[in-house]
Length: 256
Ligand code: ZN
Ligand code: FE
Image (cartoon, rainbow, N blue to C red; front, side):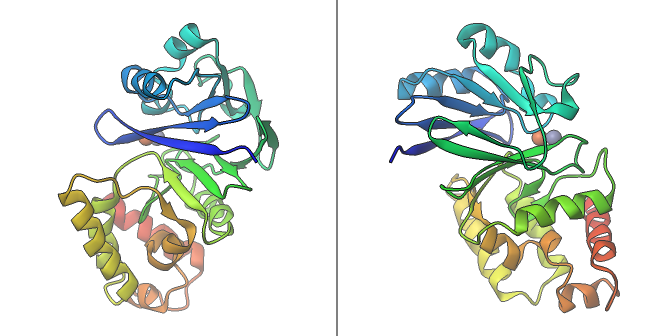
């Protein structure tokens, strides 16, 4: 069975780019293209040739190096069909629930609009790896710039239904700031408190907190936990609709 390797690339201030490499076909995809130099360095270090870019959404810190990389590598750029006019160099538009092949690996697309309209995530079902851009973060979720809270909540539910062991590769190292907010919403959550300590230790050593897993996010991420009675009580929303609890949590984070 061919192996799928993942290389994490710190870019810009707090972005993560990723290279995903299939050992058999030698295909290599860059998940987003935050910055040219660190991606080129990672390709060189591994002696890989870039064949694809998978864009999660159109924001500049996710597509900034698209055109330069395409010029150098003639790679194929895949992104949301809804973002055809906003993703530089897009070759192939994909849609929600679409499955395509990357070498011997299946990739499933989820439309996770909310942060932007046309934000997608790339999921490798056999490897249980999720590249979710700015939709879901470790202990957080993307700011809602273009969609509605309803849309964002629906998007996050698509991701939380994935197997618990799924590795979550998000696009920013925002975890410590997210943690500081999360404990204000659910200070009673023991698993969360333990995780926050672990996050502080990792960051003190300059280490990444990513990837996390769907299971860990479900038990600690306040944006996936509007059903928590403690969160509802802390927000004075006991018994409220889950989407409303989610929306209130998102609103509080915006001004935290
Ligand atoms: Zn973004
Ligand atoms: Fe971003």
